[in-house]
Structure formats: structure tokens, C-alpha cells
Amino acid sequence: MVIVAAATSLYLAQNLLTVALFGRIGVYSLVLFCLYLVAQYIIFRFQTAKSEDTQENEVLSANHSLISLKRIVFFFIVAAVVTAGAGIWLAFIGDQIAEVTGLNASFVGTLFLAVCTSAPEIVVSISAVRLGALDMAVSNMVGSNLFNMGVIIFIDDLFYAAGPILQGVDMDHVITALFALLMSGIVIIGIIFRPRFWRRIWIGVDTAVLVILYFGAMVTLYLLSS
Image: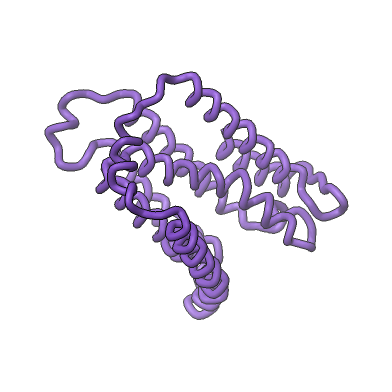
């Protein structure tokens, strides 16, 4: 729903109606932020209503019982500061890549910047899989997409002083959102529908389809940017 709302808001902001709060904050980004809060509430209620699965918690506690809280907090803060600093530098590099190569900024952001900013998520997910915390590995990626759509767009709009941010971006992002919808649908199908023959293949059929859709999205965006 958040992805649908983002794509719809982008189209409406540029083709039909733009409503700005205080002359600069788009009402659409505020709607996305509210949807994110609603989604978090629904997830919390759903999780608390389920019976607690202690198997994953036992695995995590067994592996980290010897690590002190101060050590965890210290390394977390250090990693957060390094990530934030690299992110600021990465924004300037991405802009230079777009200027030097002549590629569309939306394509550079969707491919290069998105891959770089998702690198920590990849490491975290792989580490979670190795620990046996499969739910944490998947929720890390899915939750990140939810946070990016619902919160980051709203925060960007707060810092964009020229007006509603969705009114000033490229319409190519609608294509990106549509591919994200397709991929999200595949993820949902893969979680709910689990035929037995999938287990005989090294990589899941749903995962293979996700990879194909991703490269299809990149090719489409490249052709549009050209």
C-alpha cells in the first residue's frame, strides 16, 4: 500500500494536484509517513497476537550471551556514524557520476546509490542467516523498503525548501515503483505459497524471478534515461 501510495502521489503531484503545507511540505509525503505509522501499528498488533516463537530468540541469545550491552552500544554508534558519513560523501559522488557519464540522475540513484546504500543491509541479512535468524534477515530488507517509502521521502521533503519534493522529481520513478510492486508481490507469494518442488532447486523460483525483475527494471530505466 505504501508503494502504491508513493507511485500514485508522484503522478498526482506532477499531473493533477499539488497541495503544500506551509508552502513547502507536500501533503502526499505526509500521507506516506502516516501510512508507515499505520503499517508499524498493524505489524505490532499482528506479532503480539501470535504465539511467540522462541526458537529464533534462543539461537540469538546463545550466540550473544557473552557480549556486554556497553560493547554492543559502542559498536552500534561507531557503525552508525561511519555509515552516515559515507552516505553524505556518496551523495556527492552520485551527482558526479551522473554529470560525467551523462546518465539520468534517477537511473544513477536507482542503480549505483541504491546498491551502495543497501550494502550494509546485505551484510546484516547474510549475518542473520548464518545465525539462523531467518525472520530477521527477511524483515531487515522488507522493513527497509517500508521505511524508505514512508519515512525517508517525508524527511527529504522537510529538507527540500523549493516546494513539495514529489513535484520536482522525474516521472521515471513511477516505473521503479511499479517494478517494486511486482517484486513485492513475488515476495508475498513466496512466503505464502510453498510447493514442494521448490526445495529441490538450489535457489528458490521466487528468488530467481526477483532477480530477473530487478535486471528488467534496470534495463528499462537505462533505456528511459538514454
